[in-house]
Length: 239
Image (cartoon, rainbow, N blue to C red; front, side, top):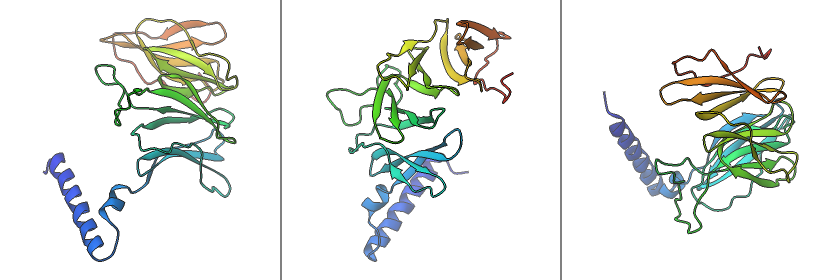
């Protein structure tokens, strides 16, 4: 069985030779091969009539969208530079009018965000939101893993091993920590009615599934044990 490195080397060798052959015969160039555009992160709105995805063209990453029944594609964000900053974790608001996403890569073991262009200003991993109609783009906060509420304009995200909340409907409302709990809090997931938020509470050698009630402002844990419970998901009836 060939190793992954050998397979990867073979693929690169094949692409290089194909590009050289095509260029010699008047076809595409190696530069065209390496700058070939590709889509990723495809998502749909709650009602399914709108879709969005990330489109990488020559290193310039932007969010593109389309709406049924024609599904004609259009560019929504306006990032014009090849700065190496990823666009990930796309998600629609409950009404389909906003798309939340993360711009910037994950931190390394030293807590440093990738900065491929050595920008002297530095780089951040931030929660962003872009409006479907106007293309208005907002910076919500530093953080990652944003999850829009299934009922309303709230968006919850991870920051500093805790969960924070912000409003897509009120640009003047500052993000705030949702609750305080022990452990590394993450993997948020809204109940169908938008009242409860399930999450994972990491405790070093074990982890719990917690439920936060946005009405009573209380936290409870589901069958806590010394196992590693993670990635909670709700049933359609919310039970």
